[in-house]
Length: 126
Length: 374
Image (cartoon, rainbow over all chains, first blue to last red; front, side, top):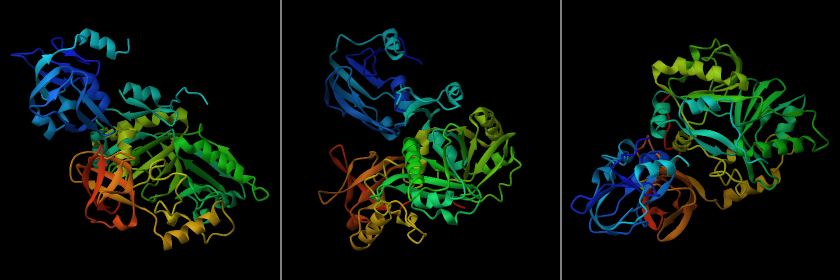
């Protein structure tokens, strides 16, 4: 399973891009997308919402279950991915690309985000 | 009981196919191989291959096999012809449903009862116990759970696929019938049954033959789009087809009449049967004071209802969801639910489901959601 090297990861299986002009992109990992199964509904945080690291900010519903979406950082949402709202299967088909979920102006980042290698270790059960 | 999951004869094969496995009634079973939606659509339009070896087989033989089953179950087993099958139920003395079953009459005095995986031991124990009641029946009850692997091929392409690897007369095999035959050189009980709403077959074979049969079916189906299919799509297929699932639509707290399946209870059969008195009372109750009815609900929005969610109308709880999922065929979330009779008519307005605090609008429809074109 691929976990792009340049991203950072939360233990709740979100990925976070490096901030450009203070804005970072958030999505869920391929590991999480596979575990969920076919995603059929996405409720994403809206532009202007304030999200807090480690707290729920939306939900992802699949055939079998519904999962809370957590934010890996604190900040203000500046964009949410309307393509995913319209076609939630993008989360499965392109979790690191077209299936990104929202963009956030980072106010504070937790210290415990994982590197790609650390995340691989986490998800391989080590 | 041990907590170690049981594995079917096809376990290594599922893993080699990259299946996501899940615990189901103590068995480690394939949930899906890839996308459950693709598997679902393959069964509706082409064909899917299922490992159902977790189902529980119980063989009942002997001169009084039919009398025992008539006493132990609520159906009229005496009217099943050799080579035919019937959907029926086994109830408690108080009328509560212990399980829903398919009974195959394999020979003049030989029947095979197929129970749900989670209830197989309960059903085996109940039939064994009932065999000793009323002075005892001249019949043998045999636990055949380890004697069979069960492979189902379901979908419109399944007759063609099976025909290419068997000399059995499939055209002469009607829906809900079963006959012994040979498939891919392997002895099998070939049954035209299934749980998907599609035409299809269930093949009961010795576990040692299961892998050979699976591979032969895979090869025979590869040009017509047959795919391996897991329990996840089996659930959405049966939900679209309006078929009840034990533990969801059927429980010991409900009689067949409460579940809208009173027709499976045959009071006209000879002799007593377990639950008769309670079921007669339940039938009468259903006439005078209609119980909650099992209905279909189709979402207007996209949020998915799950078992246990409340059905609401005018701010009041009027029922409960028993199964819910996004329907790949309808493209919308659907649910089965028990609702008060006053709100059960198709088209009843103002019905919603409480999805984590929000009342999402739903349309009441008659079951099933999907019926195949014959």
